[in-house]
Figure 1 (tube, rainbow, N blue to C red):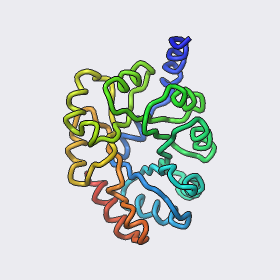
Figure 2 (figure 1 turned 180 degrees about the vertical axis):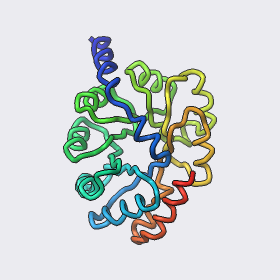
Figure 3 (figure 1 turned 45 degrees about the horizontal axis):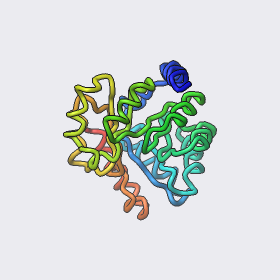
Figure 4 (figure 1 turned 180 degrees about the horizontal axis):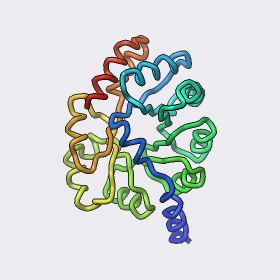
Length: 220
């Protein structure tokens, strides 16, 4: 039964690729929105700065409302959700117009649900065993999280020759200064993090500073 499920998931996932999203914006700002009024000016600052993708974490009650507002206001950009941990998150993400969904870990049920909903999906891995599971499920792109704890650059280098088909989006503990080193790694397609839109600046509503950080990130 499990073999059948894996084969079915693999076939569906061939129709769903994160490649264009991840390649078009190699620095993905990960934001947590606590006030719905911040959604539009925050997105505006990031997009004016030259980035084209935002990941909204599902860590606050305002997350899905913020997603809907952003998607409506900025339909040409890729706005997705992170911290997806159950099937209802996948369903709500699709209904709210998310361009993609991201999880901190990997789970067969979530992979199958995202596949059924035809929602581009980036599950997270930390170990070689989880990377192997993703590969067996037909997934090409994986989030490497939390990157620093999972081995950082050295971990990515070690895993590269073992799984040459896999590409990673490392997230977690990566600084602005470290991002270029990660992007230079051959199995890294993009880097995610809050360094391009830190919570302190969102709280201050310093949109000009966030725009400047987005411009700096876009140059990477």
